[in-house]
Image (cartoon, rainbow, N blue to C red; front, top):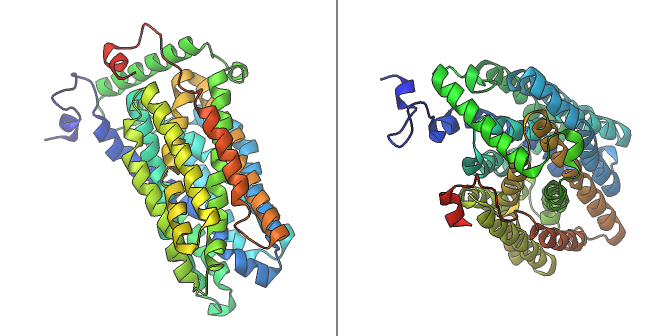
Length: 444
């Protein structure tokens, strides 16, 4: 029996497509791409101590360099997403992967603070648009009922990257002296080049959208595209946001940006400083530090797989979002005041909600924008929000250098999360549109 025959379940209409088929066909590729992207953008966390010793990069310079990636990334996200909207996901994601893979490998040739800054900026420019590009790509395939789940499944890539990346990176650091190279140089090259190889697989197998998917019939592709375009048009009509310039007048999107900014400060502060925090707990090998670092990301994967699927309407989304931010606050608070074992549990509690929160936040612009405004709006949300990825590591580095304690910056993170949690209560207002179905109203 052909795969087209399996595309529908008995509950689906004649030309409707099972979300399970879509998940199976497109998610493995985009997840694999983001796993590599996240390993390549964050592996400097494992190299922090070695970079300080081998090329004289201070804690403050490290924090600045870690953050410069996000500054460059943010500046180029909106044009990158417009480019993807114009030329297609397949070509643009392939281009992103090739350039970031080569630049990540080039980190092996850092000679000091200046070259460190330059390569981090170039890596940010190269990778700009991958995350909002995939968020845009999801709107080509999934409606509002399935989008939080799809976003969450994609963000599991970050968890996997940290679970496997930390031990692998720790092991590669152990190659110190092989062929005259430092271990951190081997790590950057061995972890950077596979992205280039995967780019060609993405080029071959990732369709631009339903109409290019060989595993859908023409009628299925047309039906899916029409349904999603109609849903987006209705959402844009309800919000009154029809152009890029009107996005910043949409209060809900402004609130998403503010919450996302505080969220990203928390995520990247932990990402870049957890290995050095763990190193301060005792005398551990690089591989052991990598293994311990992976534990909070295992918790993140569990939370991401378990919770976003329940965010199927505004009321549930708001409840899970606020609860997730409060859990992050509690987790960081425990970590800031506790001995190592309990602190690690606190980090696990905080991390378990990282991508639950992020998956839900990106359903807001996706349900309120359409067309080119959707492409630009998703990128703008990520652009302004991800600046927290610059602020968090930079402030953490400054506070560590000022106090000599890598934990001191956690109080800054906690304060920002408190603000984010308060703002989140104003998100997902009750829907009054006549287009809300009776089934959705039952869950409000």
